[in-house]
Length: 140
Image: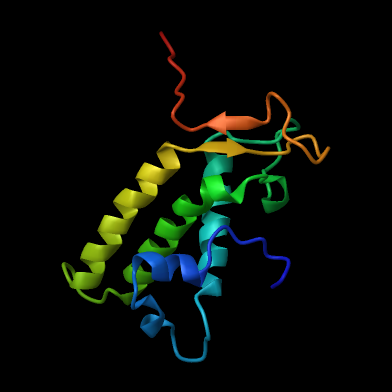
């Protein structure tokens, strides 16, 4: 677990949702499993949406250079997952919070500049980043 290189932590969650740790499931001591799932979903989202290494393969956690730029996306995704899991009835307070955090998740995802090391040299080159606010215009 020391090599996880997670994008967010329980302390990040507490800074936004002060009582979140009271929802840690029995048998667990943290939400580390949620942070891992958030990271997995984020990397999958990048791949599905065309963000890839030069050889067309998936970007991994090892290629992410500045976690600070991606942290809030991870925090709000983790909070959404936690409250989504806690919800057991349509419209309950947990579902409402889950949807609020989903909005924040999308806001952070759509407005960040991601920095990667796509060629494995340990530094970000001129073409090794993505500005998520930039969109391509395609005319037919």
